[in-house]
Length: 195
Image (cartoon, rainbow, N blue to C red; front, side, top):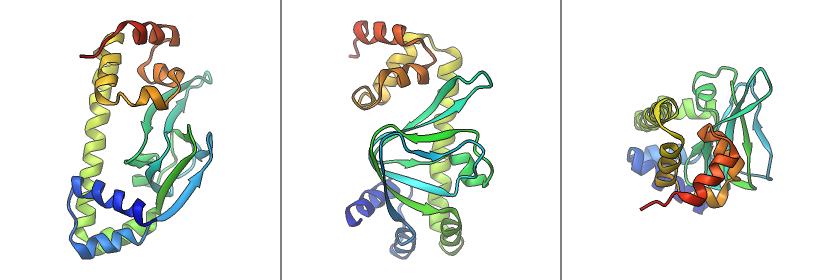
């Protein structure tokens, strides 16, 4: 777990460096968790009780339409936070499912423990607020991409931002994430070159 906490510490310092006492209080609320491939972490309708920090593996959050079609919302992978963020922060029922795509290793903390630490250590609260602001910024950028980019522009943006996803996530999920047919995704994969 020491190596996992080291990765978490590095990640947190990039968001908002924590004084030693705040870091130690934050570090002690995390527990290790290993899950196999295709494990359901959160069901739609459940309140998200945990925040995860990904050490190994990839995960996806997805929405299921009334017609039963899955729509991928986000992928998480090392080294980042994971979980259904809005359901976690609001302690409200999740609109999305969260599953592991590969065997995964996490650090996990409970919502009530995080709130306790944020109340005692305002620097932790500031770091969580920064992480939340960055997640909102990413969601708004993605909304612009989905509503105004062509398929090729969406594809190029994904490859510039996260080229490693091509090796770690099945292409059918990447196509779904981009809102395109898997056949079109394959054609773009064969024809588009990133400079």
